[in-house]
Amino acid sequence: MKLSNSFSGALRTFAFFMASGTQNTLKGIDYLSLYGEEPSVIEKAFAIYANVIELDENGKVLNAKYAEKRATDYIRQYCDSNFKVEPEYEDWETDLHEPPPINDLI
Image (cartoon, rainbow, N blue to C red; front, side):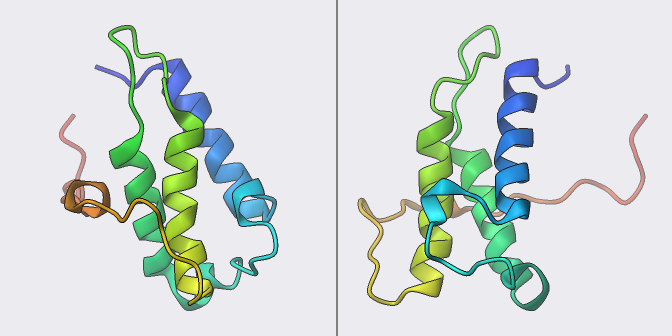
């Protein structure tokens, strides 16, 4: 099974705006340095995005903007101690699932 085109497009778009420093939910936050200095923060944000995003039975993304907001709120909270995530994260949102094996299975 492959990921849907809808999910692929949503992920690509999120990754582009995150990497380019133009993510609209992080206006005013200097987060690009985290890529080199605190990569685990970026890792957690992408994990949150992947855990929160929902697809319908045809693979169409239903909540891309909400997934982006939940993911980028993690970064905003990390960079701005006065910012509070609402609602607070549930454990399932922030889980880091196991990585793939070192070698492909196919």
